[in-house]
Image (cartoon, helix red, strand yellow):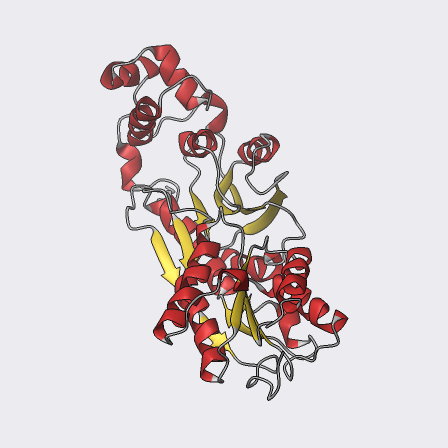
Length: 351
């Protein structure tokens, strides 16, 4: 006589009675067609109704017919673009946790920062992965419902906006990072400290700028409007902002940037004006991407623990598979100042 041991996919919670569509509709106080719209991720349903129906569907573990197939042993990572400068660190972290748990890794790219194209979600749903890690600015309520209706757990890494209640997310201490970067150059004796921000639409970028402002205030230095320039997390925007700052009659002696890629643009702008880093200008980045060790000079930066954030996201996805009703799903990791050769005391003589 043989026996079958219980598996990870058949825990005690699966004994919850599965409701029919009509039963869910009655409990939600809506029509069957409305339940069907929610289940299939279609539009035409209010946010409150969609949330109520989705909760009932999850409670009764109801999946649409074609989603009842077994989950594939995959963790899928969704980027806004494959050439994302953070991609390598994130994939290293996710792959390690996936491998330890006998899962494979799949990578998908959307067609833009805000994931407006439906193709990526269709691809994900077609593969039925065990879980999804999202490295994108945000996803629509409709796409979240697509994933939830099929019981596919997902985690957003470093969300661009305020984390939506109930949406699992992993972030970093961006405000403290901006503060540490600015406080570092202030401690070296700089008083003319400028900042190149990240996209204003991203809360993470604004938090870094807020940390810069707090450090200036703490040192008793008034913020100058012409010392704060917009940026887009790109080398081009760092170059443009750097050129504008270095063209000022009383140019800054230190520039704090919102990410390492912008800092490369500042290096370019400084070289164009025959200014030496750090003798004439100190530069600080943010992220601690791999290339920062090899720039000339190596870049002082704030380390955002991307690999560790990715590992925590993968662990959280795995936990959500076993605990779909988990509520404490927001984690923020510390940032750390990494001092290298791009910062020094202010020059003895400046314009």
